[in-house]
Image (tube, rainbow, N blue to C red):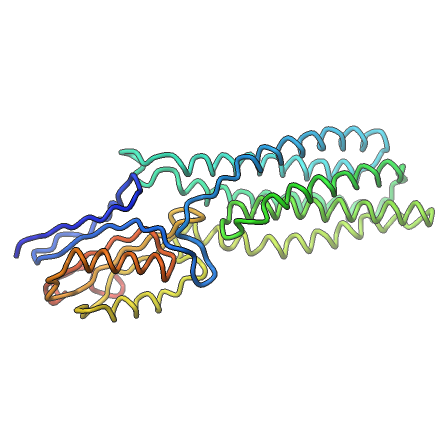
Length: 338
């Protein structure tokens, strides 16, 4: 039988290169890069949103605050402020990482990197989660030390400085409120929100110590409580980032439902070698072999199927291989084949 290759390109500069092995039967091989809307609680078909302005403002504000907080911590002998300054500095670095990854994700594919630099967003979100957990570890260890060795601090400067930190970090977090389906943006939001929470705990502790003239244990106790809250919030980000880095199916996509839907398409008798993975924190790809003996409307079938996968499941980069035999001679028919 003759081999008929059909390509559908809807706006992306690169093509998916997927080795399907050698088949001596006829097949249609289609690429589609649709831009569907998010369905089922995920938005993996969208390109990265432009948060350049938010990243720039957040970095400048937070770095300036790190300098001010460090100076205030040294003058007031407040280890809490110095620890918070270190936490803020880690967030400045994480914002730089996230911003850089977003820029890299927009780079055009090359001969060596046929997907471009989209995976940089996943690596950045994974690094952000690890950095946040490390920062929490530093805060927790410092809190335990201060519980055992209370330190007298100038509470008024601490309260004022930490209050400024609450305002700056809250304002920065608000800039990342939209776009939460992007793990990279979600990581930046969690960093800023956690900083605001930590600074708020410092303010509360300083005010209570100021009013009572004691309760030196309150500040480190609050810091430990906030650390637990941050870990709980960060765990999901770390889990999703690791899954994406390992090419797991993105959360919100039901593989069984996709397989069932593909099997219900006109003329399809078998679905095998189905793979769904994240190209970036915002884009999902799919490759699959479909056995379709008649296949007398190859191009129209490929186009319609890929468009519906984008709109219904949020899978915007699809590669379909249609096999017109009975599928038995495809070495990837076995369920355990990769």
